[in-house]
Amino acid sequence: MNILIPNLGSTSLKYQILSMPDEKILARGRYERVTNYAAAIAEIRSGDTPVDAVAFKAAHGGPRYQGTYVIDEGVEQAMAQFLLAAPLHNAIYLDAIRAFRQAMPGVPLVAAFETEFHRNKPEYARVYGVPQDWRTDHGIEKYGFHGASHEYVSLRVPQLLGCSPADLRLASCHLGGSSSVCAIDRGVSVDTTMGFSPQSGLENATRHGDLDVFAVLYMMDRNGWTTEQVRTQLSRVSGLAGLSGVAGGDVRDIMEAARAGSAAATLALDVFVYQVKKAIAGCAAVMNGLDAIAFTGGIGENSPALRRAICEGLSFLGVELDATANQDGSGDRLLSSPASKIKVAALSTNEELIVARRAWRLLSAQ
Image 1 (cartoon, rainbow, N blue to C red):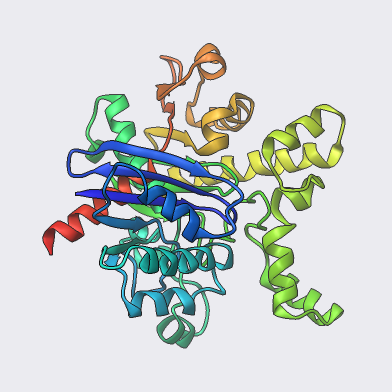
Image 2: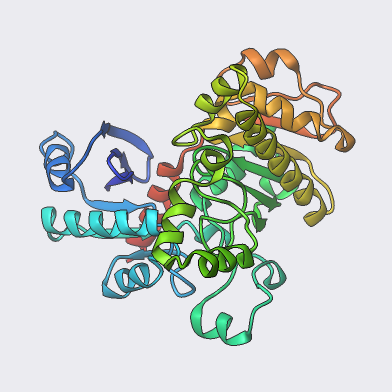
């Protein structure tokens, strides 16, 4: 079965076609400045590789949809219901689902939700201290996201270490334009920094991260802002962009601004390192210990300076980097010194593979 995995941005479409279950990549590509998904889909279909199914790395389907599903009216309704919780994600995928359905009638469409890997977290790690009807009637809980990436890390790091996932307490750090840290206890997600929405947790490139909700209410009442005005500010000009003053919040640009003497850019980097370090230490508390730390995502994989800054603040746990491996290495590799009590790894995540595996299991069972 050939499964097409689209990875969608607001103006981009990356894709892979994987042959399953042998997991061979048959085709891959990328389109930029996409204004019409139909045109990009037509180009993909014009290639030599037939497509038997399309599987999406969907973001938010609420409490009912925390797994992998053939997309039907119920799935789309749930994504629309939780659109306000994940506006930058659900809107894009809803548009793409409609475009793929029209362009490829009869081809099964599958949604592999980002929340799936976190759905078995303990109840005490899922709930907010809000009225019970918020939780039971409206689905307000700590879902967690980046599930496909964290799941891949949970499988790949044991391979690097030569052990079983069942033997490992792992802090998985997916750091990029969107960032989260996940505590993975013997292969199972037991806590993660993102909560009800992908807005929460660590500061992201343009999204705010954790924020006292009363600060939002205060600003709305004081300025007469609508929810849409606040949502736009907190989604597009906050996070690392808001801290640094660097448009877009790309860490590479922020580091360049810091080197040029920007105090605001330096502060943004300090905040990011501080929050990641604190989250990793929290993973150790959650799992009563820590065996390994993994860095992935655009920042985690490619920024030796930030990895070093994060790990230097964890020396009390016995974390010790090998300076050469951290600075000069490439590919999936260990970064920790032989004396380090906790292993440290950097790796390239593979969310498309996890999505393809989930879709294959679902469709082959049917």
